[in-house]
Image (cartoon, rainbow, N blue to C red; front, side, top):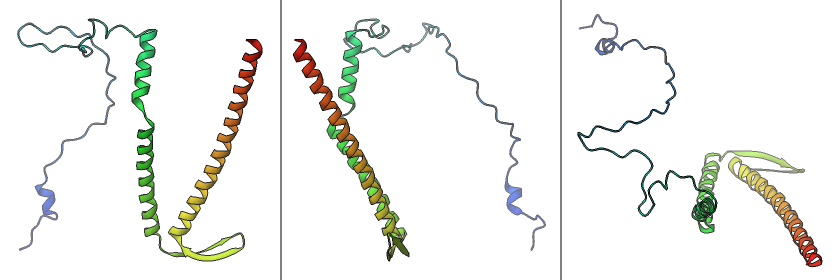
Length: 168
């Protein structure tokens, strides 16, 4: 027996309410907090209290020596050479996996011509060779620039040492 309803699934769906145009929310502004009534437990509002810190110390801005010591502590905790090495290793592994996927997905043989040499090799391999060549060029340029900067720094140190020797 055939149904007279052209789309039986459409009749089982409930109609959705009409949607209004999307209005961006208003910016949140700070509102003064009033203390809670003494009827129930209260929740402290404000910066966290660190044990051993004098009252009101969290509110006072750090100045002078305090600011420098806070910055030094933050710098010493931020990054170590070992952490940077592990991060570089992790990034390198991700790039290596992506390159392996690139090679495996591009096995079509292509004709390559370079400086008069001709040959055919898989597309993924050709792309890998191009990426390695580009990385080598960037590395060479970086080494040359670092060498220039080291030479300039050495000359500046020698001039400063000679100037201090003559002066003192």
